[in-house]
Image (cartoon, rainbow, N blue to C red):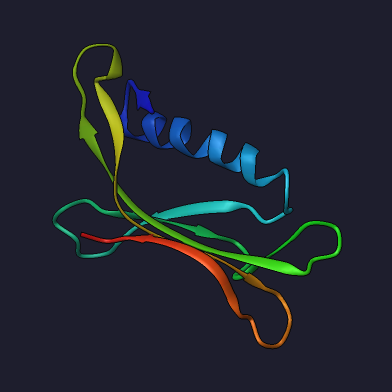
Length: 107
C-alpha cells in the first residue's frame, strides 16, 4: 500500500487487513516501531493473543508481522510498506492448542 507520508502508508496497509480480520474476530490490529532499530522496523500485532475466531471460538489465530516504510516510485509512492517477516499460526483454541497450519517467512 502506498501513501503520501510514511504514516499514511502504514494506515493504508493496516486498514484492509483489519477489515478482513473483523470478519472472523473482534480482535484489532495495532503496530509499534521497534525500539533502537536503525532499519526502522515496525511490528504488527493482534490486541488479543491468540485471537479466538468465529462464533464458537474453537480456533485461534496468532499473527506477527514485521515491516518498514520505504520510498516508492511512480504510482506506488512516495511511501509504501515493505513486509520483512511474518509468523501466522492457525490452531485449535482448546487446551492442546494444536497447530493446524502456519505460515512463517523470516529470511
